Length: 254
Ligand code: UDP
Image 1 (tube, rainbow, N blue to C red):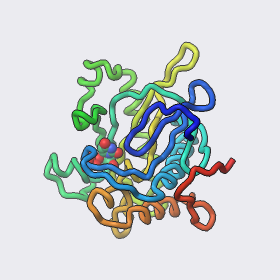
Image 2: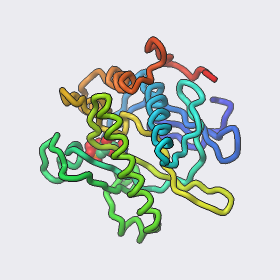
Image 3: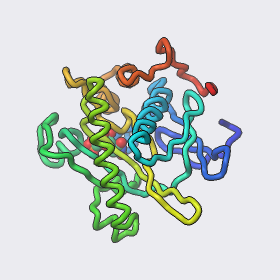
């Protein structure tokens, strides 16, 4: 990975120049951050697990016709993705009250919402990702109304599909965050799902015990973070044989 040009370094991932034009290599780190970067930690093996989990979920979503940036997993910590222009809006879909929704509206954590709620946040670390509306998104030119229609319909479809997929393995999909990007080809542009889908950006609770199986274990110092991520991967049937993960990686498996 040192041979490649580093394009961007985020909190949990690094993007490198890909092997062909229009591609990038997405490298998953073990770093975890919370509360707008105020809390930082290393969860050994998290990157390996998130690479696998995100690969699996992106492939399942592609199976139902959701366009994504994912091309293929390269090794334990890296995946090949298509280069997209990220739309600076984080889309949060919620099914059960948790996190900032509970604080903002004085709800009880765990309360089933009367229907799924979609929220938008402007992607800006300096500003602490302020919540925004369709009005802000179109007025400030982050996306147009057609883009927002596509994003909203894809987000709701993703929510329905993933809620069922996770419930099938005994996990409740409480809420999650998505990012979308513009994929340009020839003279055409389409919006595709980008970033990652993993326990770093989903809340997943055990369907029976309501035990938290996601990054809230890190945010709230509950311990057993890696074990929870590993259990999510195990239930999805994607732990490598014997559950023996190379926590250091990367190791080419092709
Ligand atoms: N989320 C995320 N990145 C962010 C903010 C939120 O991945 O910058 C995810 C978070 O993991 C949760 C959902 O979006 O699954 C809703 O998060 P919430 O608004 O409740 O904020 P939090 O309490 O996580 O700060």
